[in-house]
Image (cartoon, rainbow, N blue to C red; front, side):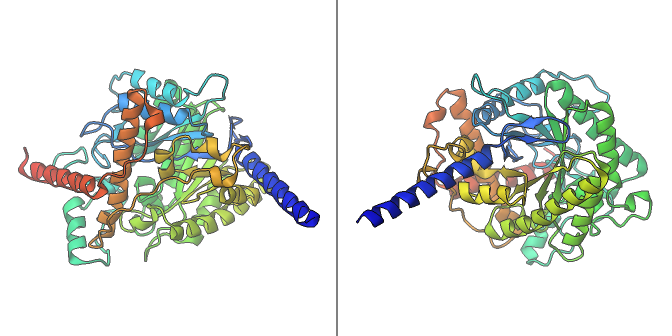
Amino acid sequence: MVDGTTSRSQSHAEGNNQRDTNSAIISSKINLPCRIVAQNRLVKVAMYEHLSPLGGGVPNTYHLSLYSTWARGKWGIIITGNVQVSPSHLGLGADLVIPPLGKPYDIEPWSRLAAAMHACPSGEQPSLALMQLCHVGRQSPRFIGGRQLWDPPLAPSSKRVGENVPESILSRLLYWILFQTPNEMEEKDIEHAIDQYRHGAALAMNAGFDGVQLHGSHGYLITQFMSPKTNTRSDQYSKPLLFLYRIASQIRKQVPKKFVLSVKLNAADYVEGGMTEEESLRHVEEITRWDLFDIIEISGGDYENPEFISSGSKRQAFFLHFAQKASLMVEKVASELDISPPAILLTGSLRGQASIASVLQKNEASLIGIARPAVVLPSYPRFLMDESLPPEAIPMPFEPTLPKLRVSKLAGASVNTMWYCYEMKRLAGFTQQGSTLEYRPSTAPALWRVLICYLSALWLLIVGSLGI
């Protein structure tokens, strides 16, 4: 009896010690190469909000309410959804958009967004606020991409999205309807795009953001220069990293030392003819040698293989495997050059205190990115870092059961995106009403809300095709 009680007591004590260790690892501070300190290892990574009016715009009250909610959640870093640097290359039509180059603009809406992202409870250290800068390039769709109906988007090479996708006829038709064959960028177009990124970073700095993230993943413009399936140029920009290098070096010239510069990269394209894992790892090595970036986020996939943009265990396994290699690579290069290594940010379906702490403890990543769970559980870090909570008391974020549209991978992936966009608007609405404690993710018919969204998209296509 005594031995059994002792054994149970020891087991309970060991469990408490492990819990305390896990929370301590997650809550530990991290010094970034630019000498800015993040208060813990959890990052609310970028998600498309769909909160702007059609045609894009500046931050509005929905954005301020949403981000102020996350600011109270004790995240180490908060990154905005993709902010488009080109008004003529929108993603899904309701994007945040940097004002056009050379035109006067009001910085106040952007300053209010930065302030909302810093609005933590009194006595706490605010989250670092990063603006994600994006140019979607060839993935800017017809009708809602910010251009005249007959104007195609720009891209490194004239390669249309979906032209070689091995899917059904209906799926290929969807790609043809949504995406035009892009015009290959001339050198003046490339210079203009670089200036747009530089302009976006200057706006973020002046508005009070702590840094910016360059979106070089998910098939957007930076990725299009990096991937052999979308870059078939024969000039100097056939070099896959030259475009990114020029953007990053231009930004570094105009921002103070204490300004975070992050890049989001594909671990691979995961399609035939695309960028391989080995090529991506060589990119990480070269980027580290530049000594320009503080954070490298690992992601993957594009509109031709969107399942790697969505969550799932397959995605997590690929990204974790790559993050392990990338972490070793940046440490090796940093040691060789006697520089501070960029932090590896791993995003991809990690759930639970033990699994997050394990990745950090093994140095497989320095930061952990959380996206969709942050929508349904905006204060998730507080639970993960609470030493008084036993593991079974830490809530697991709600994940909706959504319909699978097998007719097209792109359409199927968009179902998830749409559900979370609706939830972000609901969360922002609850915050505006001062009732965040009452917020619960909706269990109402997800299928019905997705159907409404698809019907709205169909209406936009009809309106666009008629020129109304």
